[in-house]
Length: 324
Image (cartoon, rainbow, N blue to C red; front, side):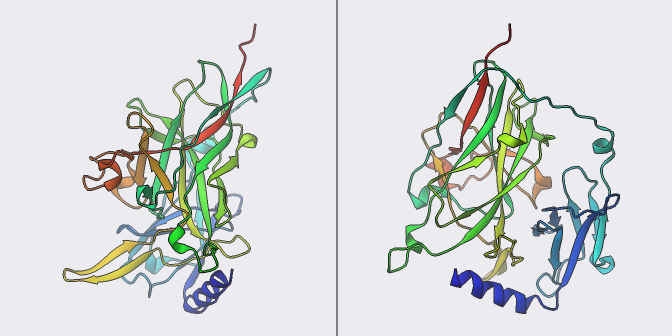
């Protein structure tokens, strides 16, 4: 963990003159955790669990406005010149008007597992960045009432990062899992009413990370539900998000190119799944539109061209017996 501690000290020093901003619910005055902050030019960041993010004009000198979004709230557009230490977000009218009653499923059930697909080939992996989100659809089993108990998340730990002592370099990365309804064309549509959940993976994570979501009470609708994962960034040893720059600037003959920072662990894509079943989107680009992961998304993708065009997320489901 020495590397993380050193990084923490360097970031504390470099951000000492940056503006820390807290996002609050305009009614309850409670923090809005893990909101998305888009700078409108293909860059962005996230608030932490306390609703805090850092705006560094030195780090992002070309930013003149920012848009803050979070499920259940109206988008907030603010000019950087008008940014104060506290920003208030208004709950969306649809969220305030909605009265949702989701009764827990009861009765006899059996557990069924959808196997996660994992491998150890670094070159057949997705490199997670904060701008990307990956969604996989899960359906009811045998047309019976079905709920999600555990999400099985396959990962790859890079052998190239192993030290001379045979130990992987330490890291601690926060991800978020979110749930989306299914559109008429089979794509993810608006976020469901189930809450999101954050979790942390480290160099000690198993090759299939088991994320318990039973307490969320996620019931799979008749047309299915999408489970999506998204990286939020590296964390301090105590689990707080590190507010680091999410992009690297590389000098090329054509000028400075901004390249998204990638995070460990890697996500193995597989050629063992028939059809195109993985959807992706870039949070700060293309109006957050979902796209099927195929050559229309990226005609130069080595993953797609090699047939590794699906992320093999699995799940443990609770399938209920029909009632008499």
